[in-house]
Image: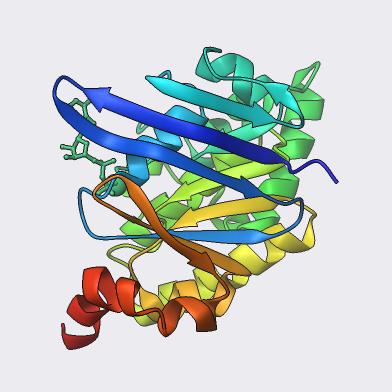
Length: 241
Ligand SMILES: Nc1ncnc2c1ncn2[C@@H]1O[C@H](COP(=O)(O)OP(=O)(O)O)[C@@H](O)[C@H]1O
Ligand SMILES: [Mg+2]
């Protein structure tokens, strides 16, 4: 079966810095692919190349079998791919509901349809009780969920989540894990960057590891946990932290 997302030999340079070097992988429909690696490894850059924020310097990106490298983010979003950002920035002065409605207009033909999509997404992300709250009044955990809700309102087949759990307390982390499982239950494929090992190991079907812009490993959570290269580059450091 054609993978949902496929990267072939992707590199991205910033001046003399190779943020990504010859990265190839695919994401299969309905899986959760975790992406881990030390700070500066190129994880966010990888998302930026996948969603069209940056063009790859070399290599190609395919989504649903079509080449998308070179397309702008809004075109790629319209094809069915959404993402969240590491630094959350919802439209601060709008209510939670209006924030999500604004995203839903990508597909909705009118206000009623946009509101229906928004309500569905608010229920899925556990934000429906906060629908009338002005976004800047939300605590960090809920602002992160609002980011996820806005991405979901574009009705993606693939969603890219960049550190959606960072800075959350254990209760919020558990709620977020629940939400990720709900998203997967709605047949949305997920690629997720996350530093919390307990979280990433428990939700991922497969994990890919980047180090200095290169893919150093890919496999099941158990394979990754026991991979000497990964332990040396990354896990040793987090396990001792
Ligand atoms: N727009 C940019 N211009 C210059 N350097 C960048 C840019 N974006 C990322 N980088 C560099 O690319 C490397 C990878 O960064 P990033 O993808 O943010 O890593 P990660 O998300 O894994 O922490 C870092 O050295 C970073 O400084
Ligand atoms: Mg990052």
